[in-house]
Length: 164
Image 1 (spheres, rainbow, N blue to C red):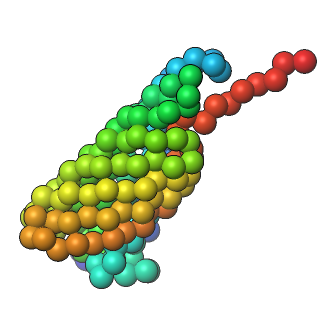
Image 2 (cartoon, one colour; image 1 turned 180 degrees about the vertical axis):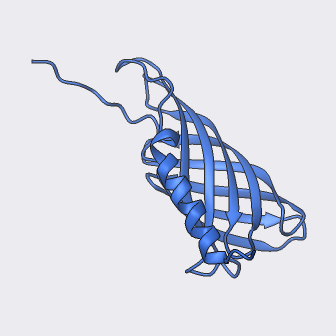
Image 3 (cartoon, rainbow, N blue to C red; image 1 turned 45 degrees about the horizontal axis):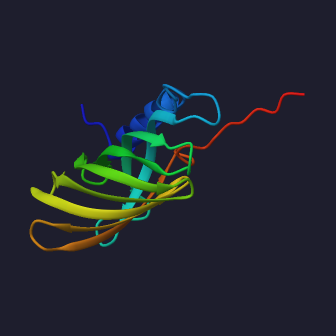
């Protein structure tokens, strides 16, 4: 029995979308004006220059943990993401990075491994709400650039409630 690529991609996307409420959770949020620790799972789509066709993006599943300092709203933490290539029908890469910055702009630097290239990756990225831009170099000295769109909003976003 042969299953088409489109059927596999649709089933994988539907499964991930059905899990998105479970993946967009906040494990621990403290009251306002204290340190804000967040552990959040996320899903998204990724396109890489010269590698990913517009109609077949990579699927991203990740986990981000951040800590927001109450005194200056400075954010730091880490991010771990795994990408799956719909076009190649294989896992694409695993990346781990350190995060530092503020709510609307985080810088990240990290290392990873490309399964399809069998090479180590070094990368930097700029992260905003729901998007990330990546610049990387693999172990074979080939540069690449990518764009992620994900379910992640602003890290450390304070949900302050006004009581009357």
